[in-house]
Amino acid sequence: MNIPIYLDYAATTPVDPSVAEAMSRYLTADGIFANPASRSHMSGWLAEQAVENARRQVADLIQADPREIVWTSGATEADNLALTGFMRANRARGRHLVTSCIEHKAVVDTALALETEGFEITWLTPEADGRVTPEQLQQALRDDTILVSLMAVNNELGSRNELAALAEVIHARGAVFHVDGAQAAGKIELDVKTSDIDLLSLSAHKVYGPKGIGALYVRRSPDIRLEPLIHGGGHERGMRSGTLPTHQIVGMGEAFALAGQCLESDQAHIKALQQRFLQGLEGLEELHCNTDTRTSVPHILNLAFDGVDGEALLMALRGLAISTGSACNSASVEPSYVLKGIGVPRARALASLRFSFGRHTSEEDIDTAAAELRQAVTGLRG
Ligand SMILES: Cc1ncc(COP(=O)(O)O)c(C=O)c1O
Picture (cartoon, protein in one colour):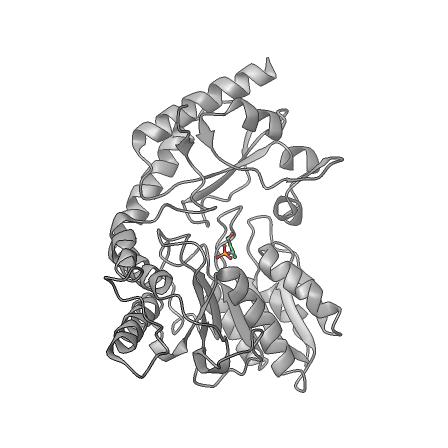
C-alpha cells in the first residue's frame, strides 16, 4: 500500500527523531525511570531535574518563567483547566465568560458545560477572515466579565488573532485573558509578555513532540487563581495532581526547544510551500480560499471547490492525507461549525478541505498534491 502524502500537520505532527531519542532515555531500567516526585533517592532527583529542564525549555519558547508552566495531558486538558478552573475559583468576582463560536471544541464544549453550572457565556462571531476585532470584544465585555478565551491561531482556517490588541481591551476592563495556543506555539512568535496573556494552552504533538502531553501557562504576577480539576498528591502547585510522565515531558521540552531553533526556517519553508500549492492550483475554476492568506498563518489552508462534494473529493484523493472540518453522523454530514461561524454558505462549507503543511513537506509533495487535486476536482465535475 502506498503511504499517502501527509498534508494534515494541523491534526498532528510526527515526533522528531531527536525528540524520540531523548524520550527513550527516560523509560527503561537502564534509563532514568524513577518517579520525579521521589525525593528520597538520587534516581528521583535525576528525573525531577529532567522535568525541570523541560519546564524551562517550554517556558523559554513563550518568554515565561518556568514556575508558570503546569503540565497537563494536552491542550484539551489545559483549556478545561483554564476555563473551568478559573471560572470556579473566581465566581465571587463575576459569572460572565466571553469566547467565540469558532474556538476548538475543547473550549466550546467546556464553555457549554460551564453554562450548566450557572455561568453566562457570550459567543462572539468573528469577521469573515476568522479574526475577532478589539471593537467586537469591547462591546461584549460587561462589569461581571471575568474571563475571555480566544485562540491565537484557528485550527481549521489558520486565522490569527491580534493578541496584544485584544489583551489591552480585556485588561482595561479588569478581566483575564486565556489563549489557546495549540496551533501557534512553534509556528509564530508567541510571547506571553508582549501579548500580555494570562493563561495559555499548549500541546506537544502539534510541534513534533509526543501526543498526550501539554501545558498551561499560568501567570504568576498578578497571580491567577485556578481551582484544580484533578485532585490527588498536590503536584504542580496543587493545580494538577498525578505522577508526572517524565518521558513525555522531556519530549515536549525537546520539541519546544527545537521549535525555537527552527522557527524562522520553518516559517520560510512553509510560506514557500503554501504559495507553490496555490500556484499549482491556479486556473482551477470555482476555487475559493476560505483562509484569508493575507492575515493567516501559512501552515493551514482551507479551500472550497464549489460544486464538488467535499466527502467525495476526500475519497477521490486517497493519495493525500487531508481533512474536512465536517462532522459525520449516521444521518447526514454537517458542515464545519468553524466555516459556518465565519459565514461560509453551507454548500461551500461542504465543498471545503483543509490542507496543512509542515517541516517535512517537500516541494515534490506539493506538486503531486496539486496535480492530484486538479485531476480529482475536474473528474468529479465532469
Ligand atoms: C486549537 C486547538 N486547541 C486544542 C487542541 C487539542 O489539543 P490536544 O490534542 O493536545 O488535546 C487542538 C488540537 O486538535 C487544537 O488545534
